[in-house]
Image (cartoon, rainbow, N blue to C red):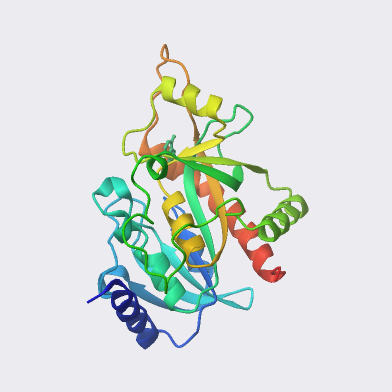
Length: 279
Ligand code: HPA
């Protein structure tokens, strides 16, 4: 079976379960899956039921594709995602994005839990990605490597406008209306799973990263390859540690705890964008 047939088979399985035709895809990161509970007329499809779909092994990722309505739009929401550090190939990590495209989805909204590198960022703040730096993508772990299927997208993809300007503008308007702290900045993508050393954090800051995390960039590249519009948002779950003489240590529990503050904020932003969706 070629790749495209695998995407189609997965999409057919989803279509057999859900009557609604989604137009927008949501990817909900660590601890952020609760947002899918807000969807109306929901159909829940466990990842395990979808052929080829990678299962997330990480705590805080429920592992369902939830299809339902939010602000009158039909959304397919991924409760959790698979990561490169779990041992999946980048083709597996980005398989769900290809399936979303196959389902007829034209816009994806990616979310992630991230460390705050910009000293102005606080736990609970949100950051809209206006751009990213992908260290894996630059050094040989780019999901678009390998033979290119011209039916899916072009060999060489321009990513100067990876994160849709109109969606960003709309998100910033919504944040202003709701008094939600939403920054715009650069997401620094790494493979993980170890968190960063303080020297790495200082390097990331010097290189222009505002948040740091272990996801999102691969999905954004594949979505752009497929011609989808992309919006992405980090929730700052912890402030990155930039000095060694400290008792502090980043841990996954603080990431999940902070996600509880972030979910209602992110929900408001996403709902506001969907309500007044820019064409
Ligand atoms: N670093 C990398 N990934 C993360 C972090 C972090 O500090 N917090 C949440 N995801």
